[in-house]
Amino acid sequence: MMKQATTARRDIHQEVTDIIIRQLETGTIPWRKPWDRSKKMQEITVTLPENGTTGSRYRGINILMLWGTFFSNGYTSPQWASYKQWGATGQQVRKGEKATMIVYYNTREVEKDGEIEKIPFIRFSYVFNRCQLDSYDPGVTDSTPAVDLVDRIAAADEFVTHTGATVLHDGGNRAFYRHADDSIHMPPPPLFIDTPGCSATEGYYSTLLHELTHWTGAPHRMARNMGKTHGDRNYADEELVAELGAAFLCAGFGINRLDNGQHAAYIQSWLPKLKDSKYAIFTAASEASKAVDFLYQLQPHPVTETAELVEA
Image 1 (cartoon, one colour):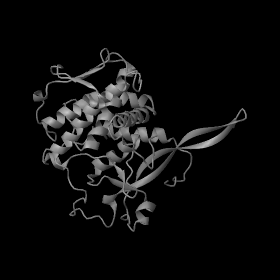
Image 2 (spheres, rainbow, N blue to C red):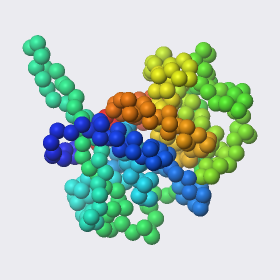
Image 3 (cartoon, helix red, strand yellow):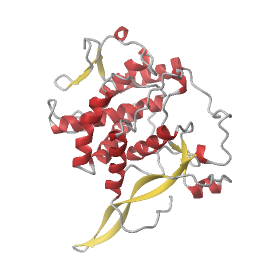
């Protein structure tokens, strides 16, 4: 476990929320890759951040924190670790490089009415990307072999099939999850077209994974309070969970997400929520990670993600 940075008492929830608010106010969505029309599609695929020394993937709010730095600094490696961890592998962080904060929960024991209770509290640490190391050579490609898009799409398709979700292609030009009959409704695949940074097939599956995240919230699954109509507070909360869940799933499969042209509208809908509560983005990111875990547990060979730093 990484050592906590020592400092005076800090409001970490507010600090993290303020960072994300500042990014949104500049027009940056920290969990969406800014489209670069000058690059080929396969060059801008987003992957999940992982610890460069343990191989564990980061979760929840930490994904958003690390993606924000990843995108803004143009990093090419998904690997992160603390100064000490990199040092233990013989690596040296370049002088002058700035670290990125990540958070995790720890517990302390408190006696109450003669019983010992474990009280969670938030901690923080700092990590550096592999691109910030003296040894990093941008001319050397990642040792992980690239997976062809056809295979990535096939993996996503198989994943959806194994969840057992009912997917109907009768949505016209809309995609939605319907509570009444517990079904996902999608536009027919041919209606999806190539967009900057995202192929038509990726657009279809990124949309489907958004609706699949909604599907996990049903009362007989994860029982999230999903709301009923636009403008409903719970509906807005659920939309953010589905947005993040789709982002995490797409990154896991290595497929790009559809840009539906509502970038500015999304930002304007999320900002009031984050400004109103310093816990909102933490809760949404945590619920999204739990939804992803739930879907992976439905697969023939369930995968339980272990992380050195759990989501806060």
